[in-house]
Length: 204
Picture: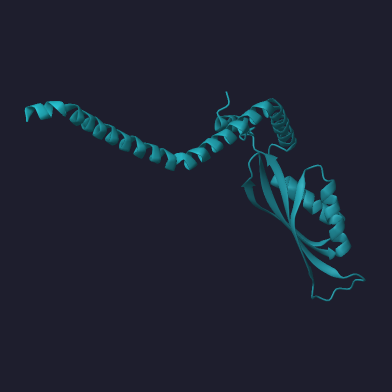
């Protein structure tokens, strides 16, 4: 019996080695199949990263020109900002509205200051004006506002025919409008946005 085992020992060794190789093959095959399964998502990630690299390279090429354009825009904004007055004098604006109405001989003129809104690099102050006159007088009123030294904006207009009997060759109307006056916000600093973009793309 011993001689038989000795004679066949190499077959036992071969079988043991074959079993080990099979187990190793099975393990490696499972790893390979797992990699094959992940391949589509890996390809998608690679394509996404490639596109991002192209964007970064394109951004780097145009960065200098973009910076110059953005800085020029910021300069223009700052220039406009400085053209606005530093404050709004309620009495001055109300006097302007009142004087225009008086020159046009509009009836029952009334001007009242309203709210002020912070709109970034400037503040907008509203004034409500009411007056009675002809449609032509109303048109001339707005033309006079457009010619004023101070920058004014007509936010809305409301016109109503009056029901009262008035001796006039022309139809008399009640006109109501909201006018905005502006002043710049000295605490506001316009950002170019270049730094944020560089940080997003991690451009050094």
